[in-house]
Image 1 (cartoon, helix red, strand yellow):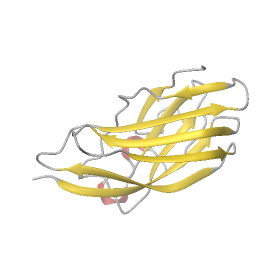
Image 2 (spheres, one colour):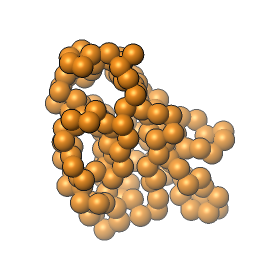
Image 3 (spheres, rainbow, N blue to C red):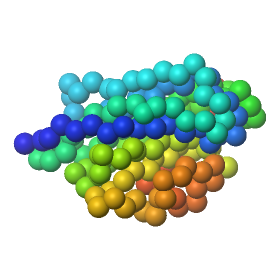
Length: 150
């Protein structure tokens, strides 16, 4: 039997420019489970927003994938609309310490989206130290290149 869980997600702008018309969506692949969706008119460079509540499931009968989606308009260089692919997944399993915040951010010299979240025991997965960076190297849990500009 699957277990319904929630975690707070904080979104960070490490893009290098202000972001407008930001849309965040969190979902699972399980049919019938609705996405958590949030909108921000403006998020200044270097600022964060949230926390945003994210629902997910763990255990037997739950789906193996947790999807993260962001789209936004960059006001700086490069300018234009950017977005993640709809199938960008980073699994939240029963080892994730959902009493701590998960992080989701855009930035880096490669113009990518990243996730970082706690693991069981209060540590951080894959060396993530809890501080999103513009150029994180391996300091994140999952990442994806952004599509755009459009």
